[in-house]
Image (tube, rainbow, N blue to C red; front, side, top):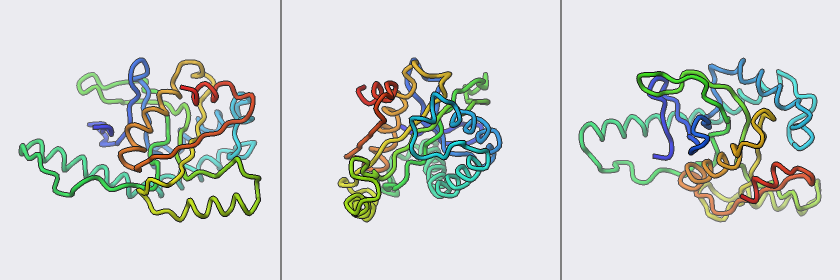
Length: 229
């Protein structure tokens, strides 16, 4: 099952393969806003990170982080509930040895709910579940913004509008990739594996992703390596 669940908290998450199996990708957490916003603010004000990003304001303030996390939590609430329902149903079917799929194939979502890259720092000895982790970066797949077209041009606006009108699950949607990582974790192959994991375990099976575009600023050697791999 591509989406894992913490047996102690029931939180859904994605897990990177070895040698980065201590890295997970989670949704934003309503109960963890203060700590995550602190870590996010530190990363997005780092001179090795913010010059390569177009979206976040600089300086990036704690209130920016809190507002962003709250917005993401609200946006992902329905998906979190749906995944937890699927998890409980799967457990019940396993216990009853029922292999039938009563609800049919999984529905396609229009949102990449898994966004927060975290390093697990402590595990439960009995279950192996993550007890503590730290936010180290972000990854997202959203409707593509057509950066190759002139900013503010009618051509760019029309391309975005056409793409945004395509219904969820349609293979013709053009998706765009965005990401950043704490400099403390650069050069370890984490983002390369995070991109692969997100595409394989979520974007393809749950968003029906067929077309993905990514762009980066000239000179961003880290992102260029991720895109090549």
